[in-house]
Length: 81
Image (tube, rainbow, N blue to C red):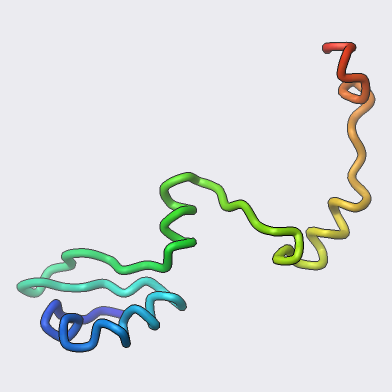
């Protein structure tokens, strides 16, 4: 979604809500000026990863974790490879 800076200023709440679903590009003088994004997307962009609570993980991710095994070479923490 793209909006002018004037439109953004007049409807900040609306565009904050919209940015929770998808980035909102704010234009100034007809050019892209800045982008409003949800905090979790910003964290992902800045840090390159996201920490989630186990309750927030998808079922297939939880199933993959449940059947995962430590490779034998790493099974004994005192025996460094």
